[in-house]
Amino acid sequence: MSSGRVPGHGLERGRRVEVLIDGRPAEAYEGESVAAAVMADRGLGLRVTDRGDRRGFYCGMGVCFDCVMVIDGVPQTRTCVTWVREGMTIEHQEGAGPRDAGGR
Image (cartoon, rainbow, N blue to C red; front, side, top):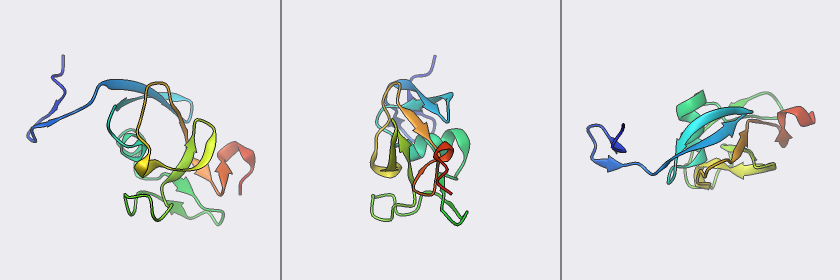
């Protein structure tokens, strides 16, 4: 069983929680951003613009809006300043809304 400590850094992780990313269960930790959880589980891409350009984590402080995703059904949610919690749903976003909403 893990102690919750990040090896080699002396950092403590929060409680492990389960979130859904694009309908699939994923492991995350309380106290980390949605952006960090998604990148750890799925890679760096967080959304696709209307023109098909891929975007990811950029400013990390909620200014640039490159990291927006659909969180619990709400599009355009900035993932770098949204903290994970048990049971939250996270969906990659195309354009201004969810992938299946025909946002492109």
